[in-house]
Amino acid sequence: MAQVKNGSLTADAYYQVRAEILACRIPPGQKLVISDLCEQFGCSLGAMREALSRLTSEDLVEVEPHKGFRVSPITEDELQDITKARATIECLCLESAIKHGDLKWEANIVSTLFELSKLKVRHPDDPERISEEWVETHQRFHEALVAACDSPWMLRLRAILYTQSERYRRMSIPLDPSVRDLNAEHSEIAEAAVARDPKRAIAALRKHLRKTTQILIKADVVKTHAI
Image 1 (spheres, rainbow, N blue to C red):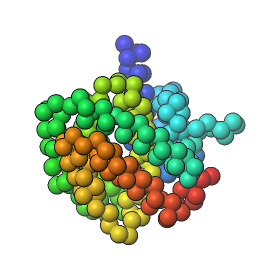
Image 2 (image 1 turned 120 degrees about the vertical axis):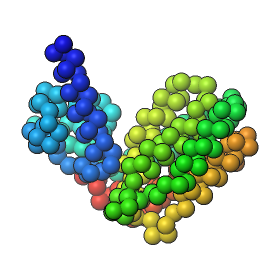
Image 3 (image 1 turned 90 degrees about the vertical axis):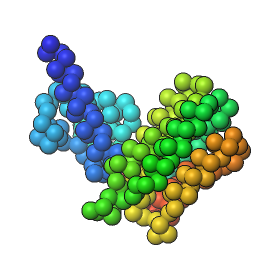
Image 4 (image 1 turned 30 degrees about the horizontal axis):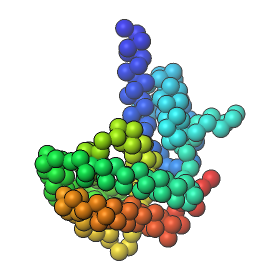
């Protein structure tokens, strides 16, 4: 029973710290003091160490010899690499989904797109922050697009790359002075997918993914955080 409890505490610590890192509330490059994290999240030293080790395996946290843990920094090179890899894998997943998707697949895309279009990207009380409800729905929308892909391995790789790009995407939200029309971008991808037009859908998806990269590079944010 003690092992189950410890596992639960580790899982809780993992999900809590992971959420803070992905939301950039714990910023890239920041040193992670285990005792401080234990106090903040109400867990044991052992549970937090295990949680940080798990986050290290996901490349969200790194270990520095004789210095301990810190949040993995973000860099322009990594951003470019993640974007290229994600665009390649996600477009392959989308192409497969268009080929194999049924009526339920189409309906899920349409319904999730509608739900997403009704939500505000920015937090109502703090325009510098992204809405967590929008984040969750946005993730479901992108998952709906590729849900009919017939390759479980490609879907797993897509999910890993989606997570790795999350910090970058969140940082881009307050940086776009043109007020990016995300609803139009999402609609373009969805409409092409449901119309079974893989060429148009893939082009729209690539453009959508690269937009975030362009915003961050133009703002010079990735270089600022490359520690």
